[in-house]
Length: 201
Ligand SMILES: *[C@@H]1O[C@H](CO)[C@@H](O)[C@H](O)[C@H]1NC(C)=O
Image (cartoon, rainbow, N blue to C red):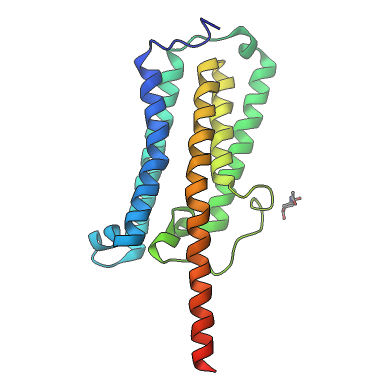
């Protein structure tokens, strides 16, 4: 096992920390918004601007996380098994598939749908079930995970595979918080609409 991953490199730990930080940050921010309207208040009550600001922030810390990851991998040992052409082709496939999932999901959801708009009270009219949501419930998260794995193989770094497992783990934890929460937001709207319907009739 020794020699596969150089745990003495501080950049490895910085990367691990930024991978864990990102979903923790946006879940905390989104919940603060939902319960206390923290972000909307910063934008003088304009929830759309608030959501855009959160989108830009999440996007930016994503780019920072990705560049930290890349830098961390550069100071890690390369494994010959991961360095061959087969591995490179698989890497291209994974990165392509990951990007298709992420980009098509953003296209289907729009900015507010992608970046936690429902916590701001900006709800989608309908649950999106078209591609890529007919492939996976969380194309953003699984697409991002595939890209991480792809870069690990592309650079031939076992450390990248370990960090990808961490990405998967923190996304699974994030989903276990987000899924029930958004389900409840939409269930609440449905109850309110039913209530309003009763009053009208
Ligand atoms: C999902 O939808 C796309 C486009 O509508 C279609 O090509 C694809 O076969 C569907 N996939 C599954 C697993 O249903």
